[in-house]
Image (cartoon, rainbow, N blue to C red):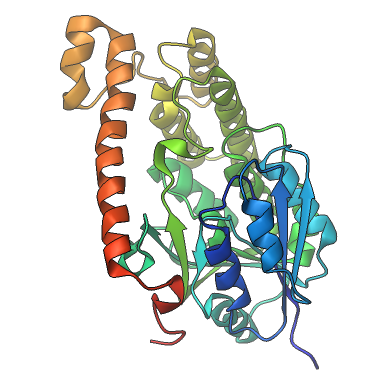
Length: 346
């Protein structure tokens, strides 16, 4: 029998600097049967032109008007034929044998409702320096335990870590194109709900490029993103409680709300109140105003919560810009291409 076909789906928007490396990492997978589908979401740079130069019998490139990452992912899925789906953002990279390791683990035990995950490490410009830091999610878990750990400990798995069967993908339904942020978190909650649990595969690796303050997930002062974030959080809580409505689940949900409360405070008191009511329904109570770290507490005390939040956003951005510029310079001095990051087997 032929091995299963794996579809590697790549949504792309203004990713001209990175798209070639992402496609190379997909095409370079050691798994023998794969297809790569790139959906350009109305990019205004040279993303589409670069992607088209990689088009082949194995790589399909299409374009659409700009409708957002979720819509691009839904379009990519509608075009794929794979038995398994590998999502890959246009600025991230797959380790050469990422898919092969996960498919091998599946052959050793599991079925189409097993959700496969992997290691992931963060980098800026030099993937060979990616930092892989294990968390409490890096193991085999039931859907309930996975969500309790995610929400109670503020953890997550990067989008490309997952390898999802077509059966699970169909059961989860399409990506929610109404969510401006955390659409990946909400989507994989639904995948988890449809699964029998996660199988973590050590050695399978994803290289996650940190976009920082330019990423779609960065909230900043965007009130539309604040609204979308709380909507996603409410869905998360509903999904988890549909599986188990115990005291530990409600405590994890209340902690989740407290962790993200600073994103809404003080600009949107209506969202703060909505979150507080939800926490109360869980038997918890949110601390309002949310506590700040010592670095910003003195600003809040002397100049108010609004200025303290500005400092909390602007100061890390300045530091991030310096770190990013330095790493970019080192990458240019290093030379080489992502094909040199690591061998397929170590």
